[in-house]
Length: 117
Image (spheres, one colour):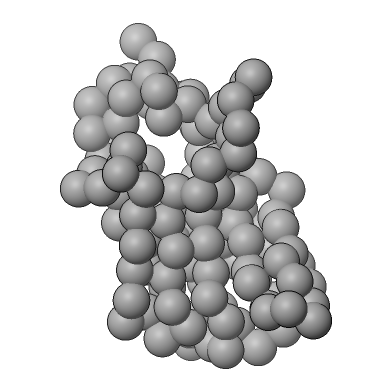
């Protein structure tokens, strides 16, 4: 299993970024995918999740209405469109696949998002 995040960077408050996650090594279209984030000194936080077919999504209250999760099963890719970014969104963002009880979760290496003026 390989998950590679990209698209992070430095952005001003109110700006936008689009994160991407390229997946390989498993049947992408079978599994729930999630974005997590972790800021320095804080606990890891579930940001958003998406069902295997993209039909069901869920979001942390802190990002609802600002972030949009999506996936393209033909490309084995997942995305996180982040708008109206705030300094408190600063964190390392991780792409995660949940392959159930037997295989568990697999994580990417993360991509840094910094929101600062």
